[in-house]
Length: 471
Image 1 (cartoon, rainbow, N blue to C red):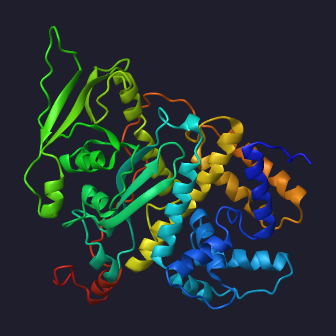
Image 2: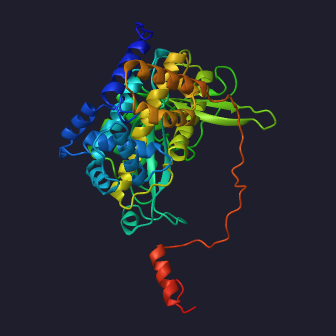
Image 3: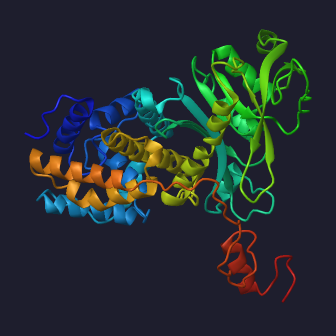
């Protein structure tokens, strides 16, 4: 047959075809087989009865629900009903009550473990050409997502200043080579321990030897750099705005824009234990770089980077500046999560369901990135050259036909057509793109609602204002 090649891509594709035949029903089940789901549920102590909504079926439906533009449970159950009817299987009920109860039994640790496993497994299999100087690069960044304004959500995620809905802060660690989510932490948008650096510390020992971490100026603190250096990892970050910048000397013996700096250990913070504080060195010897950003028609802008890569011969300033410029990929990945997968506004009425939605979105995002990595390897390109929205739209279009595969030849033909379509949707080269942060479409002239709608409706019935006065 045509697929009897000996290349790694061909072997992976043959395994994909077997999974398409063994795990029918959902297009991404081949990357998340039922055995792996059962093992994760067993490790978490989760038990399901042998009914229609098994852990695998429930999770597959949940992931397709996250990938679909319509996130409703009604459409997820209708999709399962159509699939079983097309294959002459016993029909399930159109009522979504059973699926919603089964989804509640999916625990957050299971979703979190599957997300981390899929992200790390793909990053470890990344091609050598996708790495930076042979080293894996991780990018960390934070964002916020909103949720329904219920009493339980507001208690777990208090309203931020000038916010009308509860907001969750989310810190995500991405792999630069393949774009998958490696780690993530969630917390309230305000209050002690809700900052991005605090959420990053809550992830534990995430720095691995040989890693290179890239982040904006918020993360370039003494404690983050010390933790990375103790673990054998390196960082490339922008100089923190609250730290005094180094003095750039000119003259003989001084390299303009490239110098060594020393950071002294500050006093022990309240969240750090005394034994941990004693294990941190008193001085961090780092390297500071002055980078000039030149754009035609604009004034030259200067940025100061700080890095633990002190060898200027092996790591020239131009290479570090280009690496930090690729930090913007984290912003694009967050946009794919929040806009393309519609994670910006969650639907859960309770904090438990909200957190499950977040991890469900991250897991579905990793599965789409796995398809993109396979297409990129077959097309001899980098995964970040492909469009995430194009891959998501292609998978969504092929889904009805991937669910009713009859034989291996049909599976091979559909899968090759899907990968070819994903390879076709490449990201355009738009260097130094500028977009005004303005809204052109006019909003409707309604006043902002503060509080719940139930209280507002009750005030309308009583004819009173928000302060209890009669209208």
